[in-house]
Figure 1 (cartoon, one colour):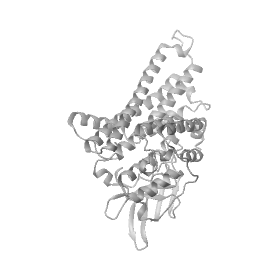
Figure 2: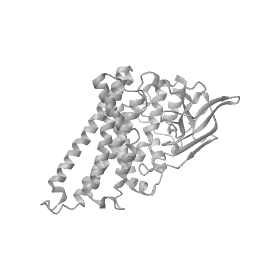
Figure 3: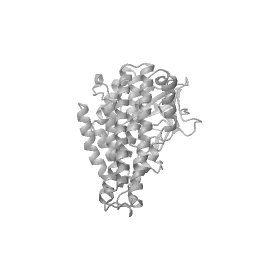
Length: 400
């Protein structure tokens, strides 16, 4: 049996209220260095260690296994809080909680007992899901093979957000029967190489680079069925997506707050506006008021989506899962647009000075533009319309 210990033991969170307080405290710490980390691409090893030492990594663990099983809406709120402080740090744990949802749905009792205990102790789960070599995004070539000496894992992954910082790297791979499995690979297992080659112009410190597996010995008890989570109705897809929606909402919130401060303190009025301060310009007031309403709508959509996911987790049916996917798709599509709108308006009202070295405000737009490409919004609106008009259930996959 492969046991993994955290870098530092974690505290234990006992309630959703405490989790939100911890998130607010961490956000205060993370915000102070966020701009500099992005500017210099200083990877957030220390920040993520604090995150998982704080106990936040275990908040979705079921109560039967010692966790608090926080609601999806509360989890989304935590993602908003931390993504506002630092969009990259806020995104990294998404794959951690995604893997835990797969474990909840498809893991055996023994696997759940062991891996949940590790997570409650502070173990950080990364990911190695996506590949460049496959002809489509949902196809894999990384393989598990049965050899005389045991199971072996071989393949190449990219967009491995969090793997660089993790204790285990949940990895999608094809078994001999052609079914996809999620392998909870120990980060420092022989044959595992994590490469820091992420060069995106946004979300620069997520560590979303490459992972190579070369004849890696894996334990059978670390292999959790994955494909079957999409062969029947489950919440894996909408649960994954609500966290992404919350990341975008957090980026939008921080861009909006920086916009307010910039307009109050530094922006100059347009010469023909008839006012002496930019904060009194009626056109500026109109744009800010409209955006404030759209941001509040994003919060409401996340709350509705979170409730739908919770219902589908409690009573898992094709109808409930479909409704959860649709409500989350609404939130994801909305926060995609609002994050881009907020970060763009910061430039529009702040002018070119908004990207001056002392502010680094350009990171909000770069982060929003990069992260919103994770799952194309252009596929979400047709799925929503097809469900409402034609009763066509959305596809079962992790992107909706």
